[in-house]
Length: 97
Image (tube, helix red, strand yellow):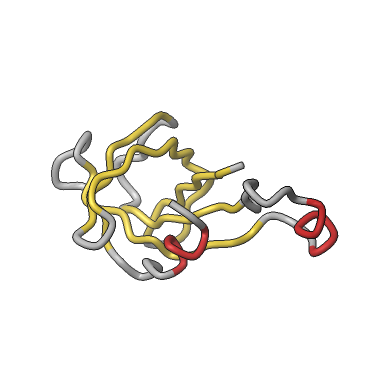
């Protein structure tokens, strides 16, 4: 999936097939490259980007590949890393280079 496809899914909930009953919400997408780097990319290269998901505070899932399912995107496997906690949720990040 591309950055734009993920950006269109911000705010949507993803079911975790590997952790039944646990859902993650796509909270934010961000491109990880400067305009200079974007200009240097070849036509078939994509700009690196990251995704931030919010999940429940507990349990905190270990970093690994998880299967996520969403009504609009279908099933996708991505590597998620827990990167912090806020008052009411745990933050998970996925980076695409």
